[in-house]
Length: 237
Image 1 (cartoon, rainbow, N blue to C red):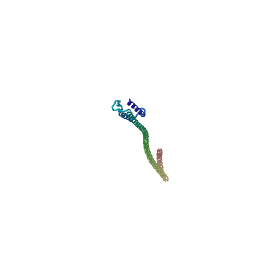
Image 2 (cartoon, rainbow, N blue to C red; image 1 turned 120 degrees about the horizontal axis):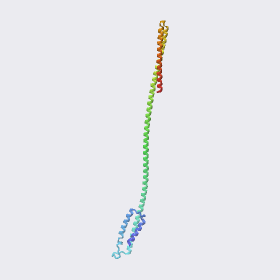
Image 3 (cartoon, rainbow, N blue to C red; image 1 turned 60 degrees about the horizontal axis):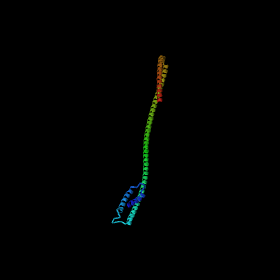
Image 4 (tube, rainbow, N blue to C red; image 1 turned 180 degrees about the horizontal axis):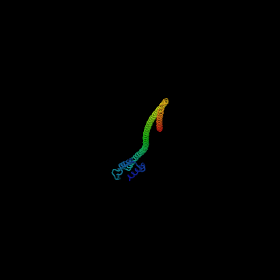
């Protein structure tokens, strides 16, 4: 009965420090050690019998019990201190977890920013490639325009040279026609000044010269028509 009374008192003291069914593993281990110490310290009291030759007096037994009680209280106080320290550690762990969560959020933000910068860099590189492609296309177009302009200039120069040649040909034809007309007129005048025996011959020669002049006129007309055709072709080009 005495042992059960002491154990009940010990449990009551322990329950004052036990946090509502959530006793830590450290305190449970301390409680196991405490129960073992109690068993060792109470062993003489448990095995005591009134008829023992080595009997304890009531005062000695009360003194032993009080000593055990005091030692138990001090031990329980130590357990309580450990529990408070554990609460501080729990608080520190919670704070550490919060700091860790903040660090993780910061890392996620930095990772997101890094991905964003990488996407921006990729987009910038793609835009650079597009700009380079457009620049090369513009350079190719400009080169093509310069080549076409050069070819057009050469074509104009050739047409100009052709016009000059045709103009020279027309001038030469006009000169030949004028020379021929002058020669014909001079021959007609010479024939008119000749004696009468040459009148018939003069008439025939005059007719021949006139026919020749007509043919030359027709040839000149054909030349003018060809020149007009060439000019129309040049204008169309």
